[in-house]
Image (tube, rainbow, N blue to C red; front, top):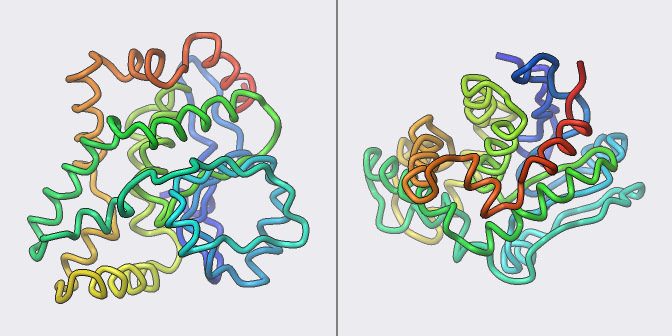
Length: 259
């Protein structure tokens, strides 16, 4: 596993570089250009100093207004990135919180998360942010960060679709998706998520919390199957729904890949 892409931080979970993977036709994604993470409300001053050194030009935030209000991102003194966010709700709850509703078992949590991933490609507010994500990256203006609340579901879908658009092998894209399960301080992330889930829904066992706070190959497969059932392929979905046509794909390649 490519652990060097994970940036260890004190109060921000799941912060990592999702570039560097080989792409079809030769070459690979550039490093130190595309980053992903969870929310930044608990960022330490040291965390903010590290992020400032990344010289981010854009931050794409998949959270809705309520999430941003409840978990406002801390910013460093050198922060000057353009923040892209939807002025409304992108989900009634973060997907892992939504999945927890009525779920009290390990297997039930898996089924709920698969259902969430099947529905993500139909949520127009999420798709609005997704379009901005691709359009922003295609501008070729420097480093970017994409994040949501936990940095694993809405963010995971966006990154997986970008990897597909650039020709990253599905096995590598899945490896990046699953890195959520080992990146950074996992126990702290699971504990924080568990506290929030139990505060809202009551007693939920530890194994179920870990399912809700992690990712599984079945989730990404469920998203892809839902897209293929409705649109025929990820490529058609990217072009017709997200505006990632041949010209935009080429702009993405020029910015994000190298020989």
